[in-house]
Length: 339
View (cartoon, rainbow, N blue to C red):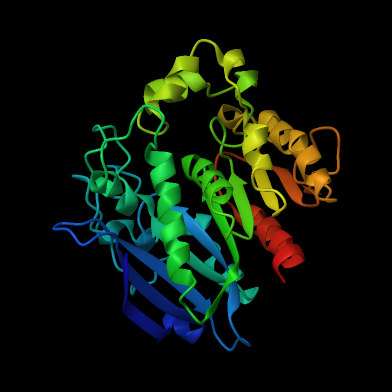
């Protein structure tokens, strides 16, 4: 593993932030996978700052129109909305996902924001694990890692770098992801207890939602549509979910005693908001073993009323997305637990 700072601009965002880019090289091999970690740091701070480490869908350059962010050279899914053709990003997609990343709000609250493009770690399509970081290792066995685990592994490698950055307090890093990358952030937090706080945004099946409810996206559907996300053995439970020896409340519980936040949206039945809440609720007894309180309520709360203590939860009005309302709750939760 090798880190190289390729950009450090103290005049970013009109002089309000420091923009840093770090090239992460994963191995000493020809054509080894490389990933770029983008970091925004607040200025005029007293000592190392806490940080949110996030993983994004379309490239670092899409989180903000800042012209100084390098455009990803990795594979990107084609999308007219993102201005992407031939699986390659260009200037048309710069800032196209700005609404999901409250960059200025995060910096104003005294946190750094670090993000990495998931396609830099492992391209999101099924090719027998011949690409991304998977190709540095032997082909996964039926009980070994798929793409979600690879993306989570990449987040841990980003944390390896953050531990070397004197401007960041690496003991106060929250890991956050949305949708399939919310599944990823939960797995990263379960696997790596260096993450001080874990956030799942609309993560659904295989993330925060209970699989046994079979509401919205199911295990069979997700394994059929995205066979590369999970280990091959998971498909054995496509038609017998009640025989699965685990469910997602146990994934939430693996984060204990560290705080975890789960977010849902009213217009996102595919991710099963009630199932996401129930996972947080049923992880509560494990937090109680540590003398900590979980979500603190017995029933699904009404929309836009956050609840919880060491397990936070809210149901936001709106669709499958990340909004300023979501970020406001994550920042408030982080203030309580990291500051």
